Length: 149
Length: 149
DNA sequence: CACTCTTCCTACCAACTAAGTAGGAATACT
DNA sequence: AGTATTCCTACTTAGTTGGTAGGAAGAGTG
Image 1 (cartoon, rainbow over the protein chains, first blue to last red):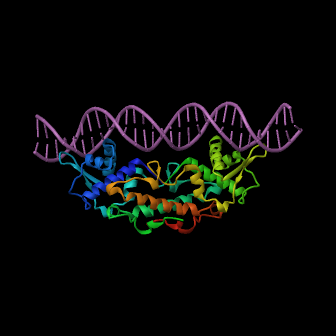
Image 2: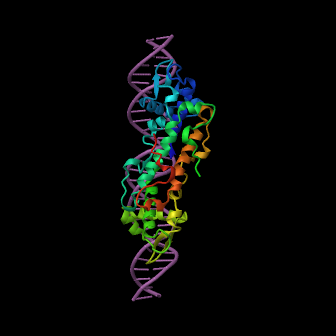
Image 3: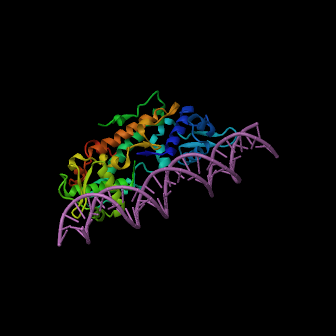
């Protein structure tokens, strides 16, 4: 799995907003404050915030007392929601979503491997919410402890 | 997870070689035959084959009766082995391996999410061998049926 | 030895994506 | 009206990906 800078920044920004008002609404956080608190280039972050808003994860207000807030409570926003808002499909094979990988002959079985990987990633990422991450420490939820062999 | 064309081609080539001689050794398969049977550009494939050889997954012989064969039996080569030979670390955050992602403040928990994802991917990919994929059909092994929520 | 076949290696090219910058328009508050 | 701030579009720069080309080195054959 490749986590791009965009995705990483997006998650960190969402966490800062969530920390300010985990219930969503109210408390608006300015883009400048987000950039400062996590060391993210402001103008780069702004493009990311627009994506998050368009995806329905953030609400924004312009003007002097403007800023961003969660569109819904932190408990209802998963890491997967943010990743998909920024990066599109979680698993891609040569640029295409894993579901439509066309294989022939002896390679036929590969498709199922990608689907299994996709499922495994989704399981972790969809069950971990922003609220989980703000709780004292790590606890990536449910079946997340698959620290593998 | 992003599967690049290189990784995809590498796996398909390995499967063709494995199908010819699942035990490794003996039967040499020529690069041209690999390219033809899976529709891979030959000159691009050659670079990939060199990587696989350097990673110790294939052995090669030059000359008129040259070609490629598995360095060890197909049962002992996992999908993860091939992916790592080509793509480096399975999970990267902004280009770095997931283990060394430095987070501050409210973002601290993110690191554990990436580690959990990494573990989940590794679980699928390391338990599925080339021999598994050649068996009649899919059965990505063990906990692979995590078709998620 | 000369010849042919095939792996091996290096350099190169075009297209795309990622990361970051800049500048302006729209909007809300005072 | 004025100011702060979000919002949007276009641009730049650098790196990666996918793919090509050309040749050197080794292995076998006549």
